[in-house]
Image (tube, rainbow, N blue to C red; front, side, top):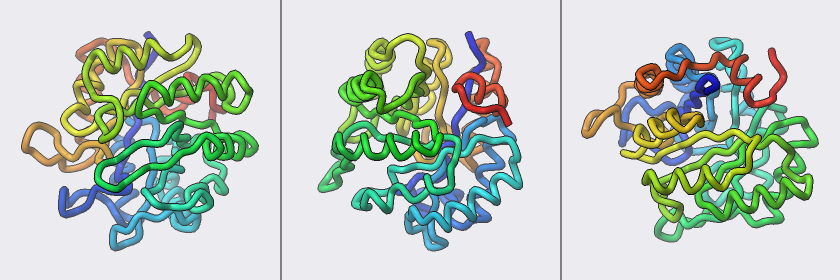
Length: 274
């Protein structure tokens, strides 16, 4: 099996300091958490940004401040901005980070009910527009899928030449309104991906490390971090994103998967080597 790519989703748009005081808001806190994850073995930082009071923002200026600071602290790390933003943001708002020409950015491939009145809207025309704007800038889309039908959408758009090959999927399991996070669910999702593409598993909440273990064994890759889970074990808050990455690294080593460096991750994903 190829080496394991670990993605750290360090803050997301929804989790708060009230839930875990280590959740980063300020530029300094975001750099601290990115470096803790990088030092522990993460090759990719999946990046949302916040205002200093914790409000989610897609401001290109705020992203640039955070990206420049992360790159100064972690020179070779892959930074993957979110174009999902937060529920209710406009398309133009969500797309602001791609003006910075990152190596990768997320491409959500379907609409999902997030609970209550929250609907994460991604119409087909939106997906096409986001994908075309990313590829025009040479940005590799990370195809984010909360259910099997979203994989089918990505495959269909790939066949039309809208999403380029090879694709890299982020399979998000256990979110409200999406597929649950059972072994059968990850197997079903992975079996739906055509050969020649890569994938990462992101388990939400208590499913973070069960999905990570399965991904390690199945030849996929792993995403951990505060965006998806704030606990290192049942009832015990994680002290940092680095602590969550360290647990994923231990798990991978016990199961015989060495950890990819950022440049090894670039080679696996078909990105240019720094």
